[in-house]
Image (cartoon, rainbow, N blue to C red):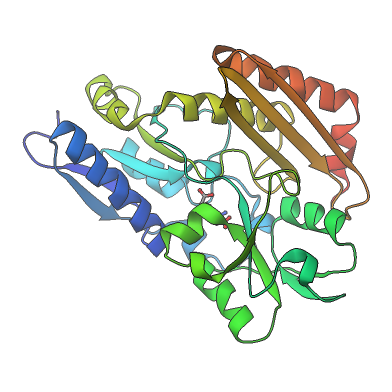
Length: 305
Ligand SMILES: NCc1[nH]cc(CCC(=O)O)c1CC(=O)O
């Protein structure tokens, strides 16, 4: 390794969620390769800004500071939540591994299940994808835009400000808050963000030796599933703030992909599925996105609040 004999330096955001997932990857790499890995905390624009993420132009706010440290050589690689990565490639940076995915589903946090919430209950989420699908399921709910880290959001339930909030199951698990989940949404009810629950390891594209080493924690089936999902996002030219949900998984050596584009007011949803050979993940995503566009997906996405 060109880092000499010292440990590999893993750049990470400093939040509990980020350091937990980074430490998990560090431990797995050490176990599988024998290399020591050291976490290097990096503050990103997304941690500093108080603006609603959806208003910040969505994609990439957590990612750029980490990529800068990779490009400058201050760190060797970074671990991101895959759903926070823009679909466009960044010059000089390569996706080196996608480890085995955690539960990709969304979870309703709070004491009750969705069906048991009283009429007009207050449910917090800042994600247009979650808003649109929640409104389709329960048009009577009052959706309250919220921001901040998971801890801040969860406190609004115990404070009585909100009846429930929606967060990713994977993130809740990483910060040890699964006990606060009232219901895990089935993907029939709510399709997750493309790549949700999956991590992404990135390093400089000129470091073939390092990429080979990081590949030790790659999971090929996860890579195929998230490739299909993110191709939908790329073809629809949507970001993480778009009302686009997807879910792909392999069953009996077939890759099944379902995707939705939903009007933010919950009035209309395009939801379609496709399947095929897992090695054709990208093509399955392309074809499904084309079919969704033919049904008017771009018009639905344009209907923002
Ligand atoms: N947008 C922030 C973000 N990025 C990744 C996760 C959760 C972990 C994951 O999906 O991998 C979250 C929080 C959430 O959406 O609840």
